Length: 63
Image 1 (cartoon, rainbow, N blue to C red):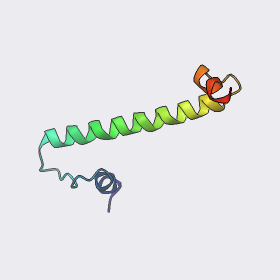
Image 2 (image 1 turned 45 degrees about the vertical axis):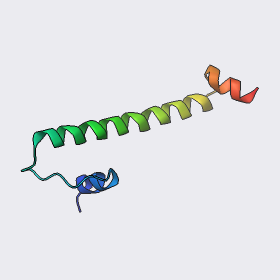
Image 3 (image 1 turned 120 degrees about the vertical axis):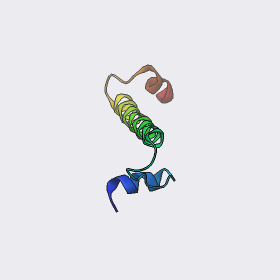
């Protein structure tokens, strides 16, 4: 199983073969990009709230 097949399985979509429509491929690319951005944002927020200069929402939780 390729990593693409694994990713597709994670998202509950069938593996897109080269003969399938371009629209399906574009949709999958969009889904993966959004997921990547979400994970990246989550990491940035986690890092920011753990930093010494913690952002305002980090301080609110501690007070």
